[in-house]
Length: 327
Image (cartoon, rainbow, N blue to C red; front, side, top):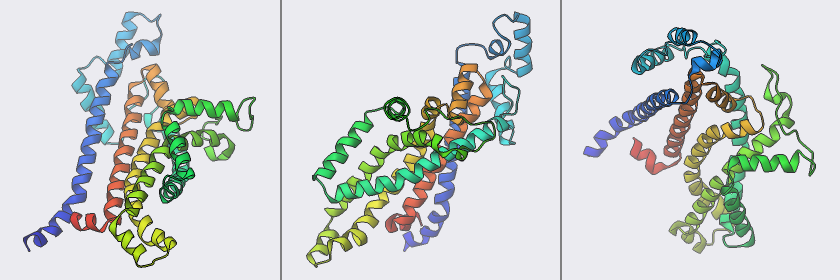
């Protein structure tokens, strides 16, 4: 009875606690990224003015950009401006950072969403069939293929795709993405095939093996054995008992896969010259463009936190036992 009285309070506090912890993570990431940018080799003022600039000009630009102030004061000023919706201006182009990365964020979102739409159902299908036919030829082929893909870094997968499908082997698809400023990535879908495929192949091994393991665990459970003893057809066992329960771990795995895709675009975009947040981050690091580096890293961190939060909420929603505990 005492537990029942506390359930409504726990239910009201669960989501706010998760939101607060997510906001705390983003805040800590902002501080770490800010500190990391300050230890990068090179002087951003010198990078903007060139190596032939006089020390007086460099010092004047540093003062203009506020780089001569204490680090804590710089961070608090940047954080305060960020909370008001102003992430600052690029040190290189002097453009507002929000406008500079806005279109690139949309481009990256298109890439991640397309990859997610493909990899999630494909992973569920491959993992479910492999788990259903455990230790058979298809299962062994899936295990061998996913193990091989897991051993390959994303940039290697991307380069292999370029060699196979964009050179003299099978010259079928463009090796790089050519987008005019403001042009939608969907204007030429052929350019997206290789980047999306590279992202899919990077996540498919993890998610499909997760689903396979879940399916095997459910098949070995007591209630599935009971259903079989009662004469329930195998197809009905799969639809009614195995898949609904096996997909619960896959929900959280999907959230982690989406978070992984968000970070994976950095390498893929660089390989295929795709104008997204990943390539913007690489360019900003090369130019010591602190505001752009900080903003892009913060976007990635926020996406990671949001995807994990959505995964937790979805897991609680599809699991009666956890849903009761959350209440």
